Image (cartoon, rainbow, N blue to C red; front, side, top):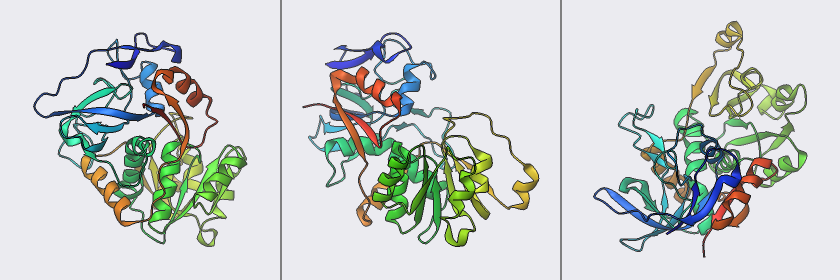
Length: 326
């Protein structure tokens, strides 16, 4: 088969489109012929060597296509071997494309429990873009964040795949969503997707500005922080609110005023990806609510994966970047 193969850790140009051994379906495994594969920032980190992936290697966590053995249209759950404890992944857990060959290929092999029916109404690009960001946003909002209809949520960063999906899910269940962003253009796009408003995080006092969009200016019930700005995120919460942390893109260390934190009665919750149960919950939510599909910013042919990575790293897009196959 043809695949995008990483031979050397480093730059996007190290991704080469070439022949690679076809996967073999063994007991407990299923092979999928891919129609589309979505990029995630996690793929960039894998390419840069952050997860100790073997070389040569096919990266990529997200994909949708045709199940080879049955002909069924499916999408792929990229969360492998979560384990039996719903509160946190077990020690065998990994993301597809970390060590197992991933989805930047014509074919991929995954555990059979990670193959689920493609939701009706989604294009191949939308289906491929759904699993990682949809699962991550679902667990952050509902499993960990306990968001309910009528509550308010501040999503830090309006343009990324998880952020755009989080807004869609929150609005879809009847919550009020507000965003932060680096540009007014991205805030405007988020408003078109149902966000009630947004603020520029380049402003010195953006947390106070964001609170003005919360009910009564009291603060948000929930804040999703994927960048690591805990002090400002807590400032945007109402007393007793919940901060869900799901990334550290702008900072891996965060100072915390402990006294203010416990007097504020806040919850601090970590999360990453999600379990098969979370994924089934996401698919059920899509069936029973009017949820906007993932935002597709741009598509590239599979053989242009290096160019797609360069585009993703420029950080100017809104939504997901997807590799497509005819």
